[in-house]
Length: 385
Image (cartoon, rainbow, N blue to C red; front, side, top):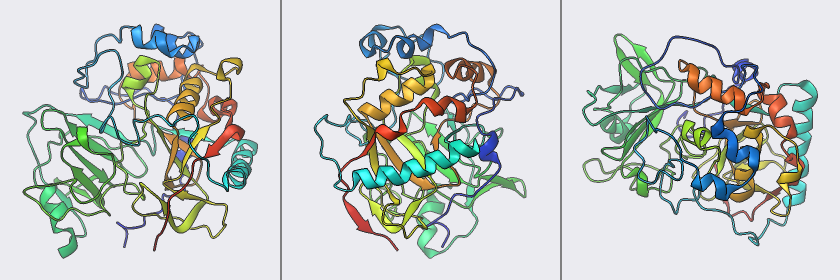
């Protein structure tokens, strides 16, 4: 069924995802930025990435944070537990998988192909990204209908019976992914193919999570406790059961000039019927033994001196995060792509993204990312279905 193993579609949107288009200003919600506007003037918030010094970043005032309620203003907001796999750094001497070299060689063949075709690797933002709406405690609630309910899905339908979803909500085009985050209740709802139908909201699948700040960032029993017992490991928009916001590059990251969490990556050659903890499931197609399973954690070689490499500020931010926290395979997709919050409707976010990317298209910006220096961490493999 769709909710268990949903392949990401091959869409032309991937070719346009990073182009920042001016539009009407959206409601005051938490979004991030995309690449696209031509500009070579870096803002002061990019200083950490330009100077390549993390210690300076920690001392730099972040400015007024208008979206997320953040207690520690010296670091960008991060979803999930501080001990989550998304938020913990990889020890320098952490063991690599014995097949790391073969797996990275196969990944490089896909990188080379996309770079030759000039259609990737990419940064999904204005299409196939994720809209994240941060809402107040008094946001009116609505019912979001699960459009293929069954007995097994009754718990999710119950969790969606009162969602603080603003009427002007706009999911990111393509998969129409959207997450609603309510800090006052520490609760999140997420949706795949969210749309209006007969005057109400419907979605094909998704999830709901309470106690977000203590959750590891993956769905499973306990994600929606108490009143609605019966939450399942197959909840969530992503094929691996990770929360849709896990690993996404956020506006708070870009304002801070640093990314203090692991990065989500979608990938064309995902191994079939295999996944790696902490993933809970997969939607892979490939029978190639060197295909990467969903849940695979990669990192840039910690011995690589990124300070000696020339790259745009946003590429450097991504590379530093990949070296410290790693990259996690989240979904199968038509192109290799990192995930970012959708900035559509907020010109300030779009402008910041364009400056941090030196005004380059995502494929141009990521051409300087040192893909060949990736390593695969030791994998705890599980059989999918």
